[in-house]
Length: 159
Image 1 (cartoon, rainbow, N blue to C red):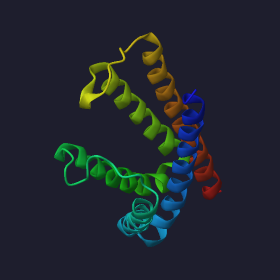
Image 2 (cartoon, rainbow, N blue to C red):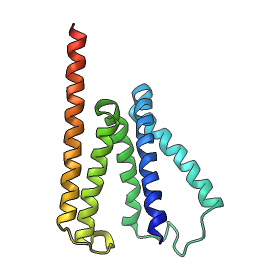
Image 3 (cartoon, rainbow, N blue to C red):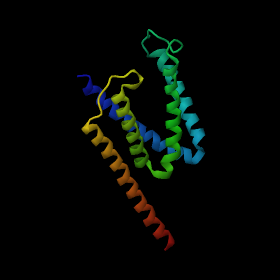
């Protein structure tokens, strides 16, 4: 029952990431990649502090008591934001987003298969390999479409 709520929630999360990447890519082109990443994290920190203070239910463990390796996840968010702000203006939102999803899926499948980081094991079977293949095909098709458009635009510019 809970998956009926969580799957649409995750889909909405994906939509917001694509929109955020597009907006941040445009802003990064105007003001710089690092300035855009800085703005994203300052505003995100502000909103997070407000949510922790006024919304979060108290937890058994605090950030100061959590295992140190679990705190490293924050660094991955920084890499993601900087990579997207840099990539989107150069390869487009669709190619960048599909590449991110392919990377997420591939790493997610590896984490599931090997039960890394304390997660439950879900074996890498034929359907999961098929999902990786389809996402790689999507990246290739989007890239090919982008290149054709770039070449057509170059021909028009030379005329």
